[in-house]
Amino acid sequence: MINLVTEHTTEPVQAGAGGADFARVRRIVKTDEFSSVFRLRPVQKTAHFVLYTRTNDLPHARLGVVAAKRFAPRAVTRNTIKRVTREIFRHAALLNVDCIVRLSRPVNSKAGPATTAQLKRELRAEILRLFAAPACASVSHKPPASST
Image (cartoon, one colour):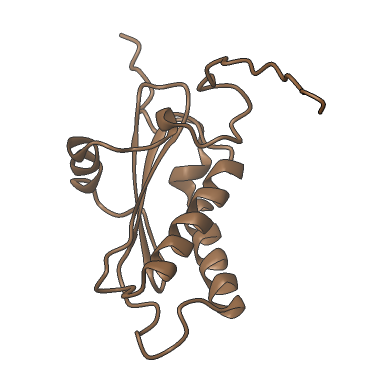
């Protein structure tokens, strides 16, 4: 019997490294963080989603996704929405902004299929439109400092 020994390095994932990860530092997880972003007006709306943004003092962007059960009754659908949103967010070149994507209208019902290829395509297209908003495209939303 052959005993294979592999060494695993336990290096922490750096927040600024690559940007293709979705580590905890890239997530909005606390209630007060969600609330502070929700207090602002929506930046972009599509048929099913609303995008809220706010600048942060971090060197990277953070994402929060809200998919209510009343708009997507099946967990499979809600998880698909979250997965697609996170994938698009990871590949977007966003800096120092907190983004919350909130599902605002029903996507399907319990009677229909939970997910379909067509639903995934439509979700992807809408979420891509959200992240193409001017507020997300700019590097920083902070007003320029006045020089007095």
